[in-house]
Length: 148
Image (cartoon, rainbow, N blue to C red; front, side):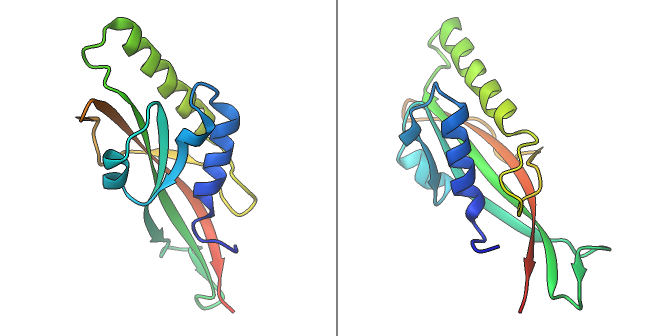
């Protein structure tokens, strides 16, 4: 693996091809959840590296630690102008966008170096701030790094 954080660019490219209701420039890698909330776009999908957990059980490490499997967790934040009081049509539109995001990514294999994406329990909840609603989703992929 050449780039530990390559999943962000791969997800961005994949989503730009599979979610046509979000402008391609609004599907972006982001540094943090806080940055996304301070710099909202609508509609938008922001991809944030959340965590990396090395597998320490059987098969997680081989060749005396030279090869290591890890789970990477990626937070995807779907942002849209606030729909909480915009009526049933807006609620339907955001619901359809959520389904498009989930069906595009669930089970998607970004590359040969990434295991298929699996949705995880997200530690964040939907928030409304400054006229935008932010819907968080957490995905995991397994990667393998090899030492020299």
